[in-house]
Structures are given as C-alpha cells and as structure tokens.
Length: 499
Image (tube, rainbow, N blue to C red; front, side, top):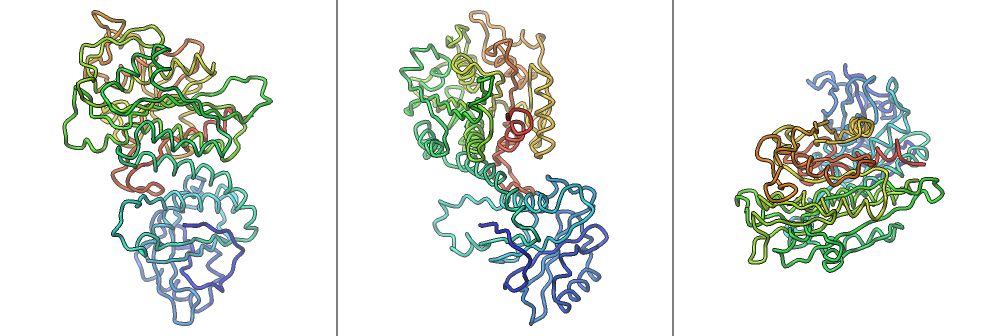
C-alpha cells in the first residue's frame, strides 16, 4: 500500500474519509464535500449511535452523482487529547475502515482539525504513519489466496493544504516504518527459512544504507573463548554467527564511543535437552526477536541518516537437542572468564548474551549498552502482554527509556535489581548457575546479565518476551510480529543521543 500527500481535490473517484470529534462535530474538511453528499453524511450521523469516539468509524453510502463512492467518518475523540500517538492510532483506524469497506483507494480530507496539540502537518504525517504501520501483511506463503484479497487497498491519499510540509515530516517516519517492517519480516519467517546463516544474509541489505558489518564464525568465537554462546549452538546443524552492525552517523563527534544494542538471536528454541512441551513450540521461531529488533533499529537509524554512532550486535544460534547438545550439569566458560553451570538448557538466552555483551564492550567501548531478548516466561506472568520488563543500572537511562515508551506507545516497566537476588543463582561448582528457580525468574535472569556489564557502562536490559508477538491486533499493530522496540529505541536515540 502507498501513502500519497496531495492538495485537496474532490475530482477523484474513491472512498473519502472525514473526521468527527466527540459530540459528532465534523471537521472542516467535510465542508469540501458537495452539498448533497454532506447532507447525507450529517443525516447518517444524526440517526446513528456513533458518537465520534476514537477508534470508531461510520460508513456512509453516497448519492448516485457523488464523486465519492463512500464516505467513512472516523472518530477522533476529544480534540485536546490528540498528540502524535493518538494521530497514529487514528491512522490505524483509517486503514481498518478502508480495508473493511473493500476500498482500493482512500482519500483523507484533513483541512482543518483545530483544537489539538500538534500542527496540522505533523498530525497528517503521523496519521499516515499509523495507517502504514497497521497495513503490514505477511502473506508470501498464502499461495491460494486471491490477488484482490491480498491487495484490496492500493493507496491512501492525505489531502491538505501545504501537503509538502507533511510529506517532509513523514520522510523520517517512513524510514522508521521500514525498520519496523524489516523486524516484523524476520520475526514472522519460519525457522526453516531464518537460521543463523540466512539471518546474516538478510542483513546484507544494510550495507546499501551505509552500515558496516563484521561477522564472527564458529572458529573465531572459539578462539575468543565464547564458551557460553557456543555451548547453546553445539546441538544444531546450523552453525552460529555473531554479527556487528555499525552505523557511524556522527563522525565529527568528540566522543567516538557508540551506543550499543545487543540482541538475543535464537532462531529456534526447542529448549535443548531440557525440551519444551510440544504445544506452542512453533512460536519459538520468534525467539530471535531481540536480534530482529536490533537489526530493524539499525536499518531505521541508517535509513533516516541519524546523527549518532551506534552499533548493533546479534548472537545468532539455534538451540536443538541432539547427541552433541549440551547437557544439564555442564559447565561453560564465558569470554569474560566467568563460568556458568547449566542447570536448564532452556535458559539459553542469557548464555548467548553473556558472550555477546562482553565482546561488544571489549570491541567497541560503548558508553551505553541496551540488550533486548525474549528472555523469560516469568516476565509475562509479571506484566502480561502490554509492557516490556526493563532492568537497568542507571536511573537516568531508565527514565529516558520510560519516556520514549510513553511517546511511542511501546511501554517499558521498571523492574528491580538487587544483591539479594544473587544468592538464587549461586552454584556449588561454578561462578554461577544459569537459573535461579521459579521465584523472580525474570529478575534473576537480569542479575546474571548484569555480571557481564562493566561498572562504568550505563546498561539496560529489556525482556520483550510478552510483546514480540501479538495474539490480536491493536490500532497500529496487526496480529503477529510486532516489531516492538524499533520505535522505542529510535525515539530514545532521537531525543537523547543524536548530535
């Protein structure tokens, strides 16, 4: 689907979208409709139970001579509550309304919604952004689906005066959108398509955007002493890879140190010898969600030419049971020199991240490190499917992430860390064990990761197990892979780390 920005015109044939706020007050853009069509719209509003609530819409059939095939009246709620996030939600509602009406072309009349917090141009750009976010489809394997079902809505045109300004504001949002879609594609692909080597192949597109790639193979990782990551990978026929993606967008910065993002990339997680129940195991294709977000974020930063030095590192492995797989009770030695007793081979993400985090700090000397992982089911028990769990050693970084979450709608919830949890991961024969029991499972996992962070590094760990995959659609996120984290971290960089 395409989004087009255009000056107002009622000469085109298609479905037109107008707005109404609480109390059924039509926006001024509706005045551009011909008198007969406008009368039909007003009559439909007066006789319907539709009240203009945000997220609701009313479909109106037009008189025979009208250029508009249909009119869709979209509710925008209270005018004073319309900000960027609300505008994106409105855009998602527009896409849903147009798709449900089987329209091929939609024309959104945007002049002029007064009484809201943001300019009309910014409002338009974010409505377009939300519309595009909601339009994502992953249908490449639906070979029997009719073509007209796949691509029923071809274009949405945003009509307003000074459309060029809105188009300019939309341009960086489109780059972020492409990053989100890149992540959603990676997360949604099946595990026979996305495995460490093929994931790496997908990353080659980043080179065209100016991102530099560095790849470590199995031999190089072994030489560096990455026993934890390699221990997870040793049961699979697919060989592991550690990949660094570097974007140097602020070459003249006095501080050359980058901000680093590290992602867990377990392309399929059976649990290994501590095998998972069969029910729902197919979902473990998206256990590489953290790596997917890091890849999508680097795509977004490079595509919009962000003025920041950033590096993304992903540890790519597959966790399988086999005659070569690691066993419960094995002890692995990490790159840092610390040893871990493997009590449960299904607690593999922290093993991958232990080596990936240590290498990132040694190699790139970042000032800030943020890791993302579908790490624990315990975070779902704590927070459900609405927030990512955030653990951090730096309150200022935590506040910045929380604010970015509020702005983008990708919320994080600040979870505790503390020495009192460390005793749960004490091992009798190694420096630590990889699980701390059922109690506080997401916290003890974060405590393990913190042991691989240098004290002078601002660090945050985001447990995204509950927010990587959506079982039902929301305003701007269809059912399936969400891309949660790309918009969040892009906003963090935009607000606090760009030069």
